[in-house]
Length: 485
Ligand SMILES: Nc1ncnc2c1ncn2[C@@H]1O[C@H](COP(=O)(O)OP(=O)(O)OP(=O)(O)O)[C@@H](O)[C@H]1O
Ligand SMILES: [Mg+2]
Image (tube, rainbow, N blue to C red; front, side, top):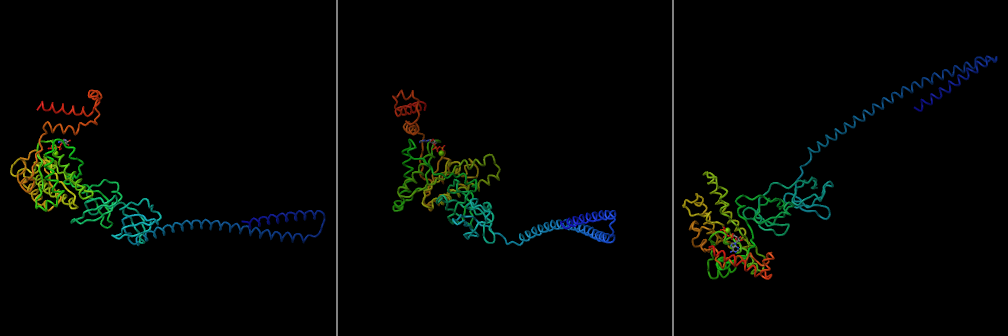
């Protein structure tokens, strides 16, 4: 470019000189100056110079055109190259992917102070690094992670959806649990993040990862198990009114053998395996059974100086049956027959599990007459022909299950199969009758207490004495009840 400009300038200058010379020549001619050959030679030389210059300019212009063309070509080439490079990269990535060694999965356990993480890989605990793109705070206990060849965490996954089903035996602290695997094998498992805030109770079914030892999910229980409510009742004897004598009997039959097991075996006594509480509805049978469970736990706690938990397995007979009401087909009935037997077996199995640590277990069969009807009575179906023997065989085995006692309750003990009530089974029968006037007074006094917010007008009538008012209310109610009965 600069070159061609310079040539142009030079060309311009030359043209200018030729012009000037030509002018001068014509001036000289006019002035009669005679040296004709010299200037015309000069002019010729200059013309030739001009021509070569023009030639040079053309050449340069052509080169410039060629250069522009080459530049354009170059740009095109660069773009094509770029594209080819991207394609090669994509292919290389593909090849890398296809030839990469498989990544392993691990279960995340915890983070270390140095920024590394502890994971379980095929049952082995390892301390590994995190890929810089992994946010340590996003890692959850028991969660699956993907590890590369160097065992660095490169990806966070969810919680494994499969594993072994185990039962919660006990919570050791807020992070660990004692679980029962198959064949009653026991393990201490760690609670995975999803279970940390969860309310767990003994007997819950949990999903257990054998490789890492984490339990990560609470599973729904089978229908049969749902019927057995496991609760530690908070009813005390003081909450029960008017049943002093009956409570005494229950305590003798159930509590004493528990609390003084040494004396019982020293004197070669065989404690009752169970008691039957019978009587009209709503008079305190369930209440007493709960209070017994509670009281045994407290007293054993005092005696041993340890924290004792009592378990109360509440089996509600009619609820079991209601599932099948209205479905009278033989097929369904057969299904039920097998199911109810299994249910009874499950209850005793559960009782055994709970009692293994020396915890007292009360198995409470409410509304026993619904489940264990006299066989062949034709009142209900064939159910009792299989469920009663199942119950008998289980309760006959109870002596081998220390710390387990069966309490039955019924409004119609006359409908219960006699074999259930024979000696060595539920042979202690305690009647819970309707309260008489005295008992009714006691019951009312559990509920109508001086702390209630009585109406001021009523209080004024008793000179502000809430206790006297409560007593009068109870007395008046009992009197009017008596008058009506
Ligand atoms: N003796 C009592 N003292 C205090 N409260 C009582 C007494 N009896 C019954 N109650 C009250 O009545 C409720 C029903 O009693 P409970 O469930 O023990 O009766 P039940 O004999 O088991 O009846 P069902 O035969 O219908 O099962 C109790 O939760 C309690 O509130
Ligand atoms: Mg009841």
